[in-house]
Amino acid sequence: MGETGVFAPEARLELIEGEIVEMAPIGSAHAGAVNLLVEYFGRGAGDLAVVSVQNPLIVGDRSVPQPDIALLKRRADFYSRSHPAVADVLLVIEVADTTLHFDLGTKVPLYAHFGIAEAWVLDLQERVMRVFRDPSASGYRTSFTVSAGESVSAVALPSVVIAVLELFPSAG
Image 1 (tube, rainbow, N blue to C red):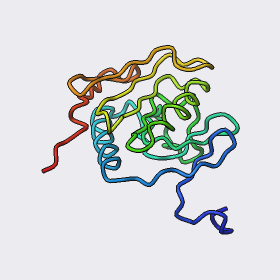
Image 2: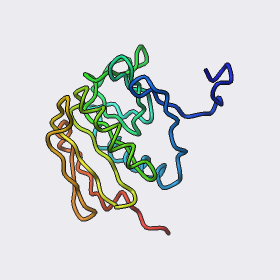
Image 3: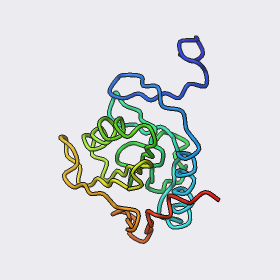
């Protein structure tokens, strides 16, 4: 559709439950948070996971979201033969600066419905990490908020501990 002019070629789009959704522009705070998370998981996950950044994820027949970060099971082809599917996902992370309502109201329930084991939403406004675990068709059964003075790790990668405060570097 980008080639035919329906959408601008540079438009950032996701397919969510059969609907094409234009993604919000990436601001510098959002980009910086993604870079920090990639740094932590890149160092900590080592050979345990592939760190995929803003790449498509096949979720059901009608959804192809692009989470800010997906930690994926290792695969020899690094997902060059096909996009990852739900069974490949260890953790998805959305970074929310201006998109918190969409992330919590649309994307997190989508991830739960299709059985993604764990989802995090880094809330840049409140300076917290919202954690969701134990998926079911009706939502995640476990959720909690990790404040800036606390740490969190993914169930699938317990050795990678993220100090939430470090995701909010002071200007300098």
